[in-house]
Amino acid sequence: MDVQCRDAAYQLLPESCLRSRLTRNGQCIGRFRTRLNGRAKAQWVPEADVHPLDVSIGYALAVAFGTGRSPVWLEAIGETLNAAS
Image (cartoon, rainbow, N blue to C red; front, side, top):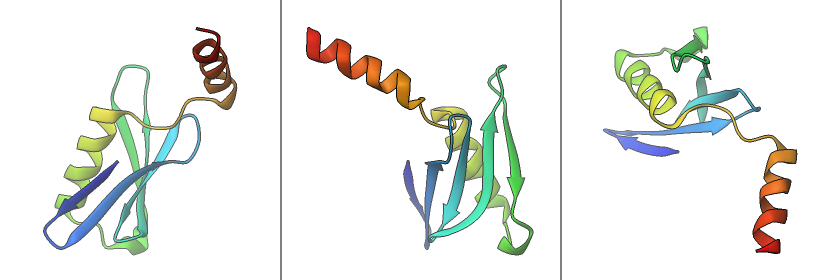
């Protein structure tokens, strides 16, 4: 997911099935994980000089779109079913 705000370009990128990283202008500033109750948890990179706007955008993206990616095996099943229909 890409977002442009003021002079910064943000991306929420999946790292694993459960986690995503938030980048600002290509630099990782934090990592997010969405819990089963729908709440997002963040870990911020201490050296990243994170601002309140970064935090707001990160949580908004993580809660709205979720974190992580589908497991490869699940995507393979979906592709197989799509090809069969």
